[in-house]
Length: 307
Image (cartoon, rainbow, N blue to C red; front, side, top):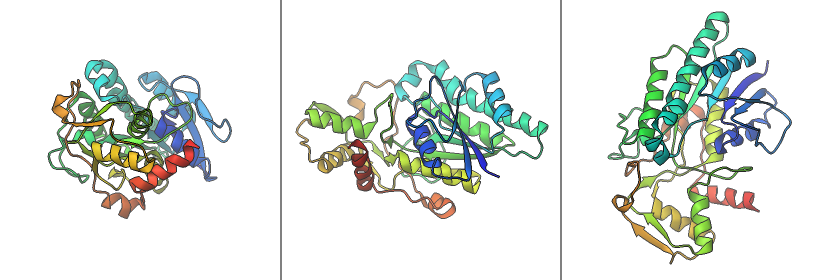
């Protein structure tokens, strides 16, 4: 029997990477779901279905229709400043949607007691306040922004539920996909440096940038192994945002004279960011066989995809 995996947010960066990686696995059946028309580059090898995760009836119908073995929930509102100003939309996508999936999976288990749907949920390093990074899975959360609060609340819903769940926390995802709707830090830095556009870059925020392919691999390993619990899934190198931009410049041999280092408190951002996050990956490496690329290796992979 093939394992049937349903992916939400399949039009996004992570969603596309998961579908593309799973297409190489003949032991799985893929259901790709997202808002609007399908943006995946290939049309064969999977089923596409439109799904708005903020609509409870649609979530319920999707679970009933497809009877997945695994749901990988990559759909979310992740623009941290937009979440601060559009709190209702943020709550609907990041919290209520998870509640709808839990309810749908619990109700499905009553109808089909033999079916134990595994719900894999994506969370974030931003649930931490950044005072003591890098973090282990069991460190206490202290969200500083509404986005972080929403992600922390979605985790709490899973902790309290009776379903089979996994939470994968990640950090500053970068990569490139077909018909991309948003940029990310590496592409933004490369573009600005190439054009020699003056940019202000913070030197007091530290992260573990994550190649989208690595995060997809973490999701797939969790889905295939069936592990429950919380896992940190990020890149293996922690660095300041300024160092990240400088490494991008070094890799593509670009001039950094357009870069001005600044402090976070000089930025007029709606949402507060944690100063130092990053992750300790030992648990994911040990239990999932997770093997992330270094940042240099990630840039080389991205470079090949750009050509």
